[in-house]
Amino acid sequence: MIATAKRRLALWSRDVNLIDRLHETASTSFHINFLDDGEEVQFSQLWDDAGRVSAWLRAHCETPAVGTVLDNSRGSVTCLLGAWRAGLRVISLPAPPRGRGIGWYPAYLADVCSHADVGLVVLDATYVSSMPSALGIEIFSHAHILDAAGTWAQLDLAGGRLVQFTSGSTSDPKGVELSLDQVLANIEAILAVVEPTPRDVPVSWLPLSHDMGLIGMLLASIVAGGPSRMNGGKVVLLRPEKFMLRPMRWLQACSEFGGTFTAAPNFAFQTTLAAAAKARGPMDLTQLRVCITGAEPVKCTTLERFADRFANFGFDSRSFCPAYGLAELALAVTMVPPAEHWRSIAASARHLDLDSVEPIEGGRCLVSSGSVLPGYAVQIGGESDVGPISVDGPSLFRGYLGESRRDGPFLTGDVGFVRDGHLYVIGRADDVAVIGGRKIWLADADAAIEGTGLVRPGRGATVYSPDTGLVAVVELAPSARSSRVVQEIASAIALRTGARPTSVVSIEKGALPRTTSGKPKRSEIFRTIVRDSPSILEGADTGHKERP
Image (tube, rainbow, N blue to C red; front, side):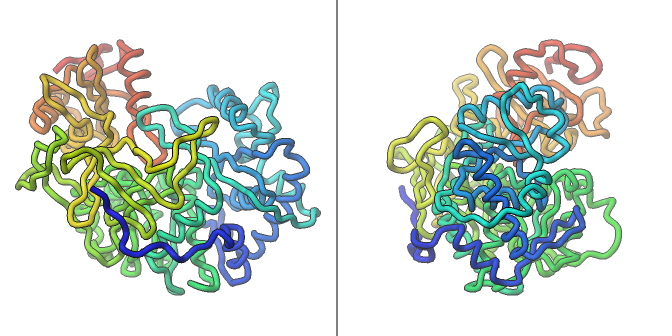
């Protein structure tokens, strides 16, 4: 089965690349508001600064590649654009995860940079002092480069590229290399669906080190600000760490600036709901018309609860635009168009056997990821209704760092089906446990944990191996004081999936390994918590795994 867009993408040309589009926007009154830094910058000024940075980088970078941790600051954005204007390949490096020591990070950077032939690394000044010079990499802060480049003449060379890393939810992250032509192709396809107007104001807290934040919110907003669309306007950027501390600041910023566009993974809506009780003051969300959600499974209950909670503030449930995408294709493949209410299917358990999907009352609620973007295609493999998902389109990558791939559609590793022109994603093909001859989706077990209300939102995950069986790893909510917490979680999983976990492991707040988009890193969870930590605290303070 193949689902393709009815209209082909005729909005971009290889004669006009991303740098050209950004340069066009620099001729308008477009601004970037770095809200948490208290600074609003006209894009033309930032673009001029990037031109001087390009000359400095070209003179000081001894290889064609520069590594950078993009941190939602003016300096970070300027250095990124400067590297591209210098024709360099930008390696978007993951920032150190929250809640973990930085001791491992320098060696990790050194390994990535050696494989990517990185000549220098650009970081926030707070990280520079933690990077030992013995690693043999030149390391600069964004501020240092901006100051040093102040007197240089502008430079523009063709050929800049982007290397972004996969989420690492089921394996170690891989570097995906894209040309700026490919990045622009995906941006133009997204804009063809959301159709920005001069009245639109994007607001985002998403990290620029993640494709949804960099491509979907920042770069797409700048391109949309060009003369042929918005002809000016602004995008408002918050820092991710500020969002995590004060989730309601995101919606308050949408209210303050009349935000019309935003995007976030499912966990962000859950986190904001949890913080809503502490919200103070008036808030107006009536202008918010596009609220893209993706990067991890989208949950019916999350969308419904969020819409109900913020309806009094003018939030319209039709604003939700669930989407599906992957780093290997720049960002997005499918999306629910604005003003078209999101849809879902309650499916029977038969889809667990990759056979067919039968809607049934009380079944698992699967949210549609929308229809295919113009110029792109989705294929469902196999002979049944449900099967492996393959994708194709003008932004499809040519290979990971250090290796190439064969031409043709890309097998995503996800499983799903197409119904009435909409893609439904069931889960990862390798997130299936075979227990007692029956296939169990780990996402279903995760949902069962979430439904107990005993775990912090988005902080429960299951892993499986034949040796350990099905194991639930959870960060318990502060209110989970019952002596039967372990039994309640185990029973919920058994009721939902038909399989009872062999162990329920309780860990400290912030200790569950997750990707930047909130997905559980199952391989790391298994490796560091289940397999290598047999004495980890579980349930009550027993010092051992508790078996329900």
